[in-house]
Length: 378
Figure 1 (spheres, rainbow, N blue to C red):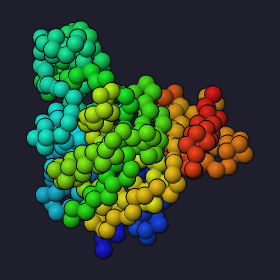
Figure 2: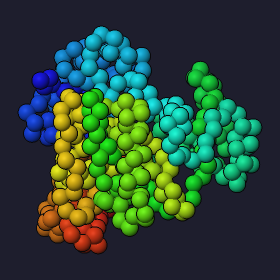
Figure 3: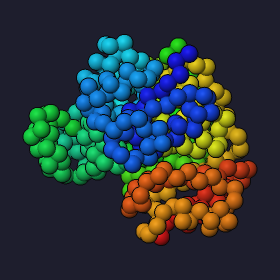
């Protein structure tokens, strides 16, 4: 069996793959972007993931390459494949997580439910879309946006002029994605894992709570589902994973609309913030499952260990000191809560860790998780 996993990117997702690899007796190596990143525990080099020779040199030391993020250029990915290196997810799938316009086009071909959308190249195009959609819309850059970056709610045709200008100046052209402003009841996320042989592993759909464009809290499973919501979410994610040929974990972010529809919002082809609860709350964590999938091993069970799990992100952290300085207080006040620190320096708005509580009573579980997370902030 291939037993050395190479992860490009040294963030917290790579960090959380390390215990899963250790438990499975696998070797794991990380190419981090700079010294001192979250996954430095397994880092074997520092280098630019955009540089072909750097990535090739790293890839030749491992059996399979996977990712902490989706930003490795297509030209680099395709050269790895051309040289016989196992890359999961591969470039043919990853392109749809890298480019939101490509993603929308492909999901439309698969007949999946989405907000109304269009590719726009000018303020005039944006004005036409606004006129047809009640005067309000969401504009997104096609590439590079995450955690609320590259996303703008607009009500005027010229509110994206700076983005058009920036795209024109760097030679990529001025194409942006515009979507209808969706009236949604809540945001959901459906995680699925797929191995190259086609087997799927699907976790329960979860509710995500966003603050300032950043995921703040996840409740698993999503409470108070209406009708066939869990089945429909699962069907949507399964169709995407199979239709795009994904290998590894795929997160499908969804809107549950006020008229009880599900619409696909975003995709992530890697372990995802909405799945961190699985470390403590599921039979198989998303990180172990991702490693199983990229090695084409049978997938693990995805049921909940307890009726409820609530994950709360630690955003920013204390203004002075480290998260570890607060451990004694957190552990004494909330002994059932699991704490995951990412080895990052506190900074306003930065994801520096998360906490998870599990149990039989949702209100009690949420209280414990929120209370523990609050102690880490100021």
